[in-house]
Image 1: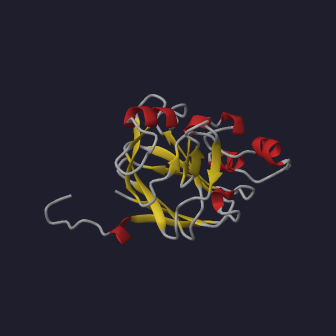
Image 2: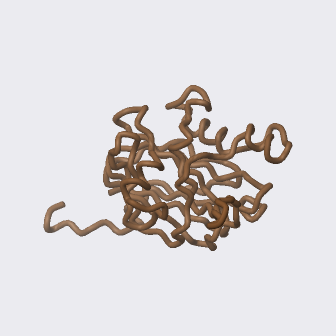
Amino acid sequence: MSSTQRPLSERERIREDLVIAPRAYLRARILRKGDSVRITDTLGQQVADMILLSCRSNRDWLSCLNTKLLNRTDRITTGHVLYSKTSSPLATITNDTVGVHWFGGGFCSEETNRLRYGLEGTVNCKTNLAASLQDYVSHPLDLELDSCASLFMNIAVNANDGAMSIESAPSQAGDYIELRAEDDIVLAVSNCPADRNPCNGFEPTEIRVTILGS
């Protein structure tokens, strides 16, 4: 940018501003290095499952394990870098109004819903993410569990016995997380359909995905 050019306003930087309906997904988008994405919980208490994939290799997925290891914390939030399987920086969290997310990998699926709730044919994040990434994977089993970060997901771990429980998402209406791409990456998002546990307040609602150019 020359000295005579003014910086673009946020409104001018918006490339896409999309509302993702309850239980639906965002068809995968490519973010170029320097682009940003803001994922907003428009009504509160709604989880969004996110997968990142390097454009350099369709085998180099986001790794939640490497992200926690290299940031030396399991509380991933503003300022932390999200790393891939090869420890390449994929994105940096530039703003986070919640600070509670699950970087433990995994996503709800028809199989786990069957075992947990005795239900068949449920809408789930595994199916959503596979549909989102249909240009990059040929089957839902090609998805990697470690590649999924559950934004606004609140999982409590008992300090005494290690028991885990899913709690209501702490996000309120308008809360968001924003990431800046550190390389060219693929973004996939599932608006979590779960309604048999409190992660979405038992009633899934919409989210907003805003993509901003650099």
